[in-house]
Image (cartoon, rainbow, N blue to C red; front, side, top):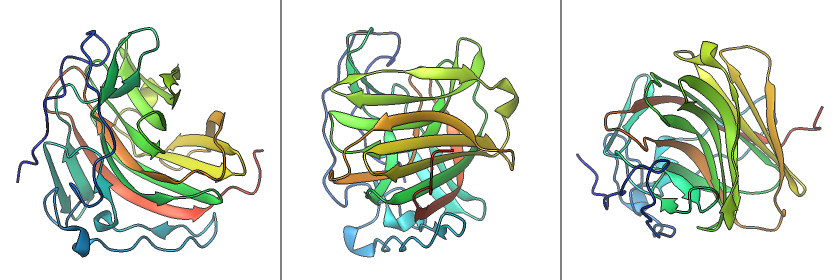
Length: 246
């Protein structure tokens, strides 16, 4: 089915239009076994973490959408989702607007845990993006992944605490591959790593986040400038946090 969604407004990186928003109610837009919505009662519990080298798969049904995508369907290759045109997450810095319309499928996530998301897509239009999203509330969140910007695919992160920042590095050779993002929350620090296929992990970002905050995390996608971006999420795993930074 087509999940209902308020219009996301103009392009998140090209317009000064704003969209204020907050966390969707629990159970709103949960990912079902087929389409994007199911009842809260049908949600499967997230598995307990085991260790960093033996991640536990999280069922798609264990998550809820912060904002439902145009459509989402679970198939043999994973969860395939289509982003709404104009969807994005950003607060104020440089552009002056607030956009709170990302499609993030999240479940409870706490300090001491690690999470990995693997996905594939054809990123080819300005600001096409996907990865992993950690949300405390509408003012404090992290999105990390790949984004097509200024003619090349980039890997990076946006860290938001009232105001957003943005850091990226080009990875054009990653386009079309299986891309994995990993969050590790240990003490008051979140470490973000990424890789394509089975390559070595690349350190993307280390950022501060107090370890007593309630949070949720999971895969996300956005398409600020166009309709039709489809992302296939092939894996969503929970594990313990990394033993060390290096």
